[in-house]
Length: 106
Image (cartoon, rainbow, N blue to C red; front, side):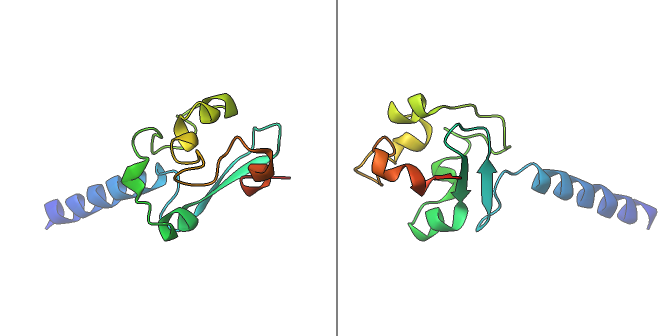
């Protein structure tokens, strides 16, 4: 009986630790606040509604844990990270000035 209780406690701890390391649970948002143009809000629901699955971006080009992937607008405009889809063909073009406010919020 003690072994069962111990296993339940260990399993619960592992599940808790694994779930807290994920950046954006399905249907949630995450904010990146370091940008000069204002914070960027990633909305998991918008991307899911567009037919995107988590595995399309995780673990590459984005790691699952927030803060482990560093990228810039230069990277995005070069077709890396968000720019892999936000290129004007798959989704709106991130490098066009008219689209800045779609991601950057003041």
